[in-house]
Image (cartoon, rainbow, N blue to C red; front, side, top):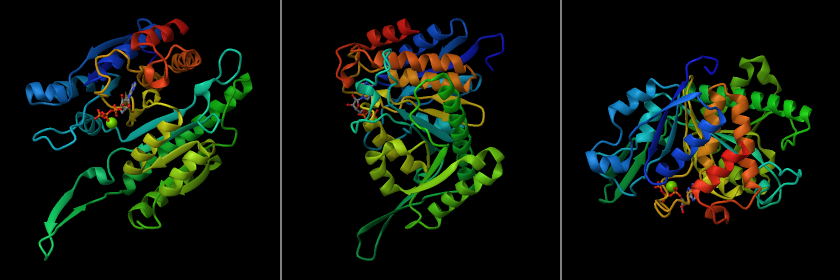
Length: 373
Ligand code: ATP
Ligand code: MG
């Protein structure tokens, strides 16, 4: 894609709350790392829009996004109780573009120029980590088929269906194996240049499930992902490993340095990735990419953060790192690497937003990243 002479078209959907502050910041950084390479189109969606117009995701937003080469999505607020006629635009966009995987890298910052790891270079246990959580994005409990009944005593009883399919498990499994192989290769390349790497073993895929209880659904997920290994010769080298989801949470906090690529059904993936965010200090640091077979939509893991909205102090790093994932997907690998290093460099300074204990604004942190570039 990147070799095409015309600029790449990038859709920006700031959405609600701090999405309106961090997405323009990410746009500035993208313009700085690859001047002239992109044209941007800003599109509407969100709860604010719904309150004004009765529509959360206009048809035009979906259509225009489909004409783009990639997208960045900010955040939408989720009302805590059901609002008639409102459903989440992000869920609808993932469906419309068949973005079946949510890829969430969780890593501590690289070392400062003196080679030493800073405060954000280690987890609270004192070690650096570098893992990716691959969350299935289309099924599990998110098929949202719930029913409410009354039992014979007149008491309420509710059910929810949980769907796990071979097709969805296989494609998420393939994505996880491919990612593990690529990460393994990148580590080898880095090692050759003397750059620090925090995962020295061969590529590993850890399957997260609960098949000791849900033997049919989680059993199918586990077996289907395992079977992917025999599909390609390059997968043979991947160390396949599994964790029951409860023990996964325990291990995540006890020895996170043991994980490379985690692959999980939708709900477990959601829970684990918020937990993992705690390991690196702030939700404001964690990027994600919604990925399908051809399209990528970067999205910070955090929400609209109404408590800090409009104060100009939202951490732009999660969005900037999401832009880096998008660049990588678009084939702009050197630019992506440059961007990640610039963020690392800033994380080794005191120029940080309040969520990381600093006093700086969104704009100051963004300016600092651009200066590092
Ligand atoms: P939503 O319903 O949109 O998810 P929320 O109330 O759950 O909103 P989150 O955005 O999920 O809020 O954020 C949870 C907490 O983390 C809030 O206190 C918020 O201020 C903080 N936070 C989230 N993102 C950032 C960021 N980019 N910079 C600084 N703080 C953040
Ligand atoms: Mg939230």
